[in-house]
Length: 278
Length: 300
Image (tube, rainbow over all chains, first blue to last red):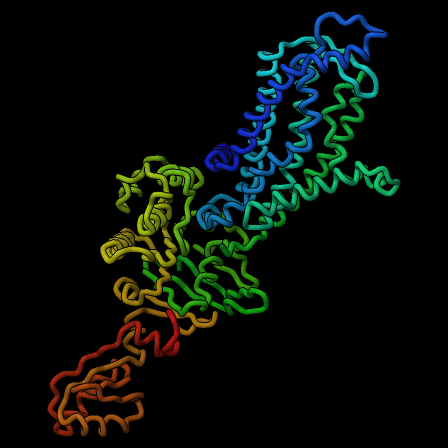
């Protein structure tokens, strides 16, 4: 299995499309951090104004941790797109490239090949999120420094530096798990077609529709919300509550796990029965 | 039999691509698989290699069912199907190393097969810099990674120059001498005639005929050129015979459609009638037999 995953990683790293996400983050993060380094005072003043009645602020509240928290909040709906760029090609590119005729005529079962592809897609997904973490927290710490984290989310939460780092780590871990669901969705579409664009469009369409439904304050849509997997994508934010709502995190992850399993189940069903005509 | 198909049937959108196909590939043979475009050759080959699932029937390789245990059945099979498509952004060696990892073959085997198809010097080049002919050779190389007992080749000489074609032909002959059974689909009937020991002919998804190539050519109604004088008298004599299907004068010869087993009878008749016989030349080729079975005007 290790050899198969290595093969798949070679294919992913050989496609230019796989680098779009890394290049995007690599360009965007320094730009955002540069913007924060100039406008950080403005954010500090906004925070200080809101906290000055209760707290005495010493130094600046603005640092890499707060910058990362803000970045994650604003970028979160865009990250799935970057994930789908590799997941969309995972299976479909073999169809369009005619290479199914090379790999499916060998002694390895289709199931193993599919699993290797899925695991390689997940490794890529994790690498992308870790790169985002490295750029925002690593580069951010060098540029903006580090310190305590103050967040406003159902109240004010002030986390000391060590606790903040721990929670950031947890939040990126959860973010990776959420993106595994996105990757599995796109992967499922990838087993159904022979071009890599269709799965990207299909996945983003479902995700955007999901975001729209959960953001419209209508009773009907509110009732639908528990069934829409997109509504669990913000699970990473839950670690910035006090106390951490582990029950809610577990429930969200459980539901995402069910969705992921369904997506993978459909992928297996389709792929094992797929006639290779290309 | 190293491979046999049993009542193989497959339809696409209601159109039967392959119907009730049963063929047997003897061990050690070079088996030519012939048929016009759209006759179901590719679909059959894809069913043989587990790329397409048959609706009805099965393929057995060494008596292991492709339907039930596809990847196990393919353990001793090397195949090269239709076009040589590889991962273009990777080198030939990396491509083969990836496939070798799937086959459980050693990296040394990769160098060996690259050398065998004459690509040893270009192994580090990316596929996108390869010519069609080089890709075809690489396609054959990847099929040899597992030291297969059965090699399934679908149009292996496509895109090759005459020298390349000869090299592939020689390679196939060498492999056969090493005990490898070759299943070869090609529209180059001349090629097939030169190297195959057995053939099967497919048309509109159905098996027309199959068997040893010598029997195939001998029993089939082929063409024979007769140079004899007076030509008009020869034509008159032969035209009335029931076992002669066509009789036509072209330049200074008479061309008759007849089974080659009947040539002694023709000679006997001509001599008995005091005809001066200059030459009786069997002109039966696989192509002429093929066209007579399929009907002329079809693209092979």
